[in-house]
Image (cartoon, rainbow, N blue to C red; front, top):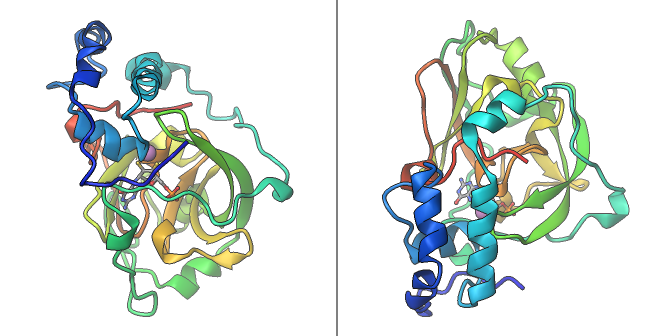
Length: 257
Ligand SMILES: Nc1nc2c(c(=O)[nH]1)N[C@H]1C(S)=C(S)[C@@H](COP(=O)(O)O)O[C@H]1N2
Ligand SMILES: [Mo]
């Protein structure tokens, strides 16, 4: 179903023309802004959208999203489905806004997690320090906006425990992330405190492999794939809307499931 993004294969832009009414409807409802380029759709979904059906699936998935309503309906105690460990896909499926060949591995020994904003203790963290915090595992479904998905098994410290430990202001509105590949991202505090939101350092029983965010990535059971930043280098707690990479290109910010 899914093929890696190949810059040499440029899908026919006429595919989007077939969906003009749906795209106009999404724009009118504020779910996408400034027009949707086919290139952006390909990069975001990691899917071969050179099939009219795939484009339609992607657009309908976006259509079901509505940031404001979803944020109001979000239940901080409701758990997303989990699955048996036997269903974990190895290796996981890769996606990024560039090809897997262009992943630049992060040096875990030199890596530090920088902290800023509404946080009492802003000292940077090392990987062993993070791994010494209480760990949780979850086997969950990764859902891409286009419609492909896979079952993954993730282990790490719950973001809530980490935020409490550093003295973050838990009444703040946003938790924002910076990454080694310049993929800014941010989530609402309710989702940050959700029990199925982890700073993941392991996939299955192993350390994260380079393409999947080594040494640390965010893994949430309650959000679409693009809301889960890999290769995190900095966390900020803030009341100022931080946005994100795809959000700046017109995709929904809340993007919950
Ligand atoms: N730093 C970073 N994180 C990222 C991305 C990226 O390009 N850079 N892509 C996102 C998208 S669109 C998806 S679907 C998931 C893919 O995660 P996976 O490769 O572990 O399946 O990572 C998300 N996190
Ligand atoms: Mo994605």
